[in-house]
Amino acid sequence: MPYGMRKGYVQEGRRWVVDVDLEKFFDRVNHDILMGRLAKRIEDRRVLRLVRRYLEAGVMIQGVVMERHEGTPQGGPLSPLLANVLLDEVDKELEKRGHAFVRYADDGNVYVRSKRAGERVMALLRRLYGDLKLRINESKSAVARVWDRKFLGFSLWVGAGKTIRVRVAEKALNAMKQRVRSMTRRLGGRSLEQVIGTLRPYLLGGKAYFRLAETPQVFRRA
Image (tube, rainbow, N blue to C red; front, top):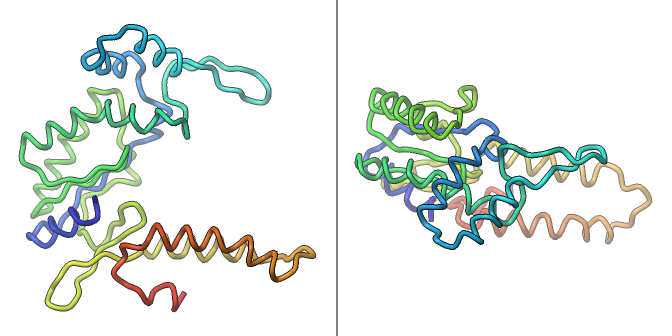
């Protein structure tokens, strides 16, 4: 799991993170580059033609079908898999250079021991992603102390015995609170049982997602 790997990297002394956000990733995947990567792995041309048709399927905008020349369908079942295929060579290059990193789809963190090392890695990633015709969102990306960044809704903290632990990131917790407020702001004639019925799946889903957080009191206080 990415969370366990992150803890291990930071526990080893990698207290700086290269936190990268790709700008409109699923909208900007280059079809030709992606198909070239797939052709190296798939021999059956029928499968490749099917994937190409999936990528080029039109998008319905205000009742009009618009052609698609780049990007993958957001929310489509194949899109996360295709993202992994495209970004696999970036992972391989980081592995070859001995970097400690985690990635989930287009979200990636590289853990280093100094800010200067982080800046070198950021420059490397700009080049690697540029080769794939992808752009880093500079406003959402940074070389920073690990305590100041979140990954998939989680952040890190130091527990007893200087042990690195995982918690729900403040931003993620605030987003959950805001969602609950919006769901309960106006009852609209609904009974308390109906409101609870609406909240229950959302809260249980959030609890299941954040079950790895090592701060059990956080939801009770929230």
